[in-house]
Image 1 (cartoon, one colour):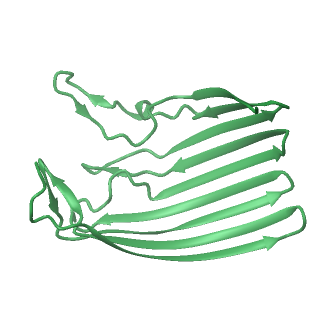
Image 2 (image 1 turned 45 degrees about the horizontal axis):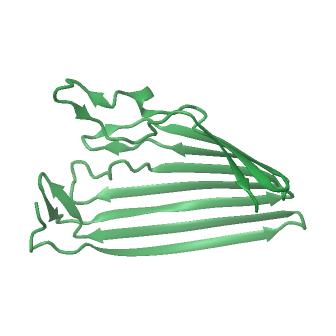
Length: 205
């Protein structure tokens, strides 16, 4: 349905606080740490009521923090990040959680690179449990990937492998709930593709 003339535009209010510490250990080593805190409130959030949008009576409130760690030693670089998010729909006390929003997320990236020669890297992601509409809880999951590059005089070969653990939501549950003539579809929260491999060649003219 078209938006009603009584609809009020959403307005957000937020605050951020960030601390950063860095240390040059020696000529070959560097260390940094960043700690951020955040809070955001969306007033008059738009919500879908069957066939039309309306303003909720109470706000959507999100708060949390993000911690990140960077380390460099010679040709090795490491990044570790952790994010905590507490998102609540104040207008829906029966199910106040924000759907498909993990409270905890961890990211790890490691790269070893010989400049202008070759590079190998590893990346990993962890997603904690989250809620879906209907108060159903999802499973936590990991995603791991590998990447590599090799430089030659006039071209570069790039290889990448994503989702090595073959993490798929269809391994946890059926996406389509019978009967086929009138199916119900579960909300998507994890990858649907399995392992993905790709190779590319970059030519330097």
